[in-house]
Length: 98
Image (cartoon, rainbow, N blue to C red; front, top):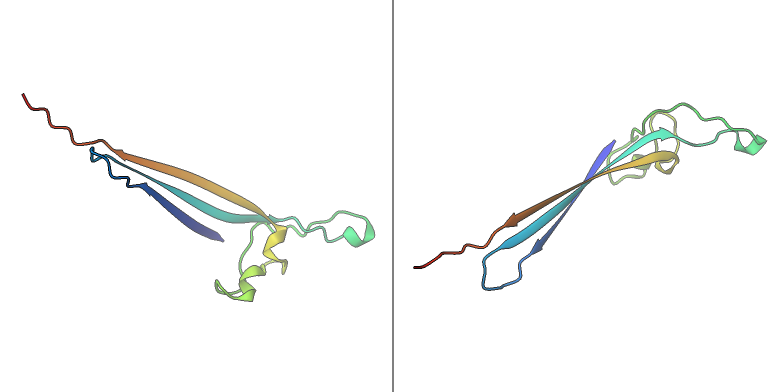
């Protein structure tokens, strides 16, 4: 399951030059394999082998936090965050007069 979060930040300060800077951060969150220790109560270590979180229901419902494959809560799955930063700069318009 992938989720995407986009944050856009603009520097629109009014100066004499008409330059502008904008940057955006794109974060993609993915939940990997299940890390729940099913044998913790007997002092052992055993995981169920679930390789990726799959939501049981639609976003915004309680079922969206439960894995359809293993039945565990999403917090037991390893969280992977990919961050991409994009910066754009527009130089000021300078006209030279002679």
